[in-house]
Amino acid sequence: MGKFLAKAQMQYTDYTVREPMELMQFLAARMPDASRTKLKTLLSKRVVFVDNVIVTRHDYPLTPGMKVQISRDKGGKREFHNRLLKIVYEDAYLIVVEKQEGLLSVSTERQKERTAVSILNEYVKRSGRNNRVYVVHRLDRDTSGLMMFAKDEKTQHTLRDHWHDIVFDRRYVAVVAGEMERNAGQVRSWLTDCKLYVYSSPTDDGGKEAITHYCTIKRANGFSLMELVLETGRKNQIRVHMQDLGHPIIGDGRYGFEEVNPLGRLALHAFKLCFYHPVTKQEMHFETPYPPEFKKLFVNSSH
Image 1 (tube, one colour):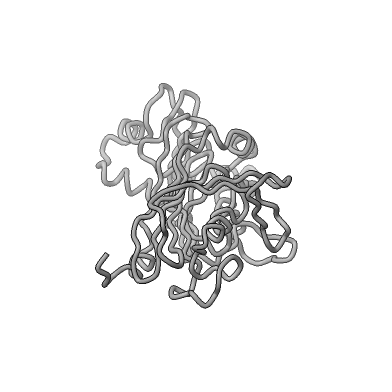
Image 2: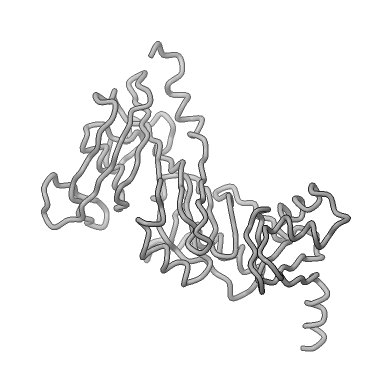
């Protein structure tokens, strides 16, 4: 056991944080001969740990007592490559990812296939076998875009219990069938989840209130490009609300009609996620471009 521990300690250079500062400033002070480019490379290669968790952000805030470790193993074992999932941001408390369409967020009783959770669990376990990710919110299997996971139970509870105070901007882009009549508006209804299908009622029938704000970006070729802001986050909310407006999302076999499916996928993407960090209280902004295939449907039009 002692031999193993000594070997493990040999693999890291350890530093203790004495005063508050950003990670890059700390690394530069401890490694004065290293260029800023070299320090950034260490971060991108995922070999810098703060309190045993990989950190890739150069402006990550350090506080006294934290332990910074730099792995001497530069073999890049911790690099993350997955065609269905991309890590956009990671720190000691949470991971923000961009999920491709077709990947389940979380497994269900019926489906035991690979999910965003199982892929991320395999990844975080590489730096500690007891590590795992905790679900905060979900995206439908056929929806692509930004998602956040917690790395410990306390952060998960903070995010879940205070979601509406913490998340201040969450937007989607969608392509819907037909040309939307209004430039902007909102849909409000009460949704009842009946396992395979969510029913919408214009009046309170005991379901959960759901509010979606929409803005029409472009109309052309029999389609409309929509930007959507969720005031509430109910299951299938955007898909149901677009159907309520008479403009279902293309490629939606459940709440629309599968035959209008020029992209071969559900045209719904979570492109923006902004929140106050549950621990550092810092404002976090994440945005991905509109999927290029959505835009292609609006090319060669006079609008």
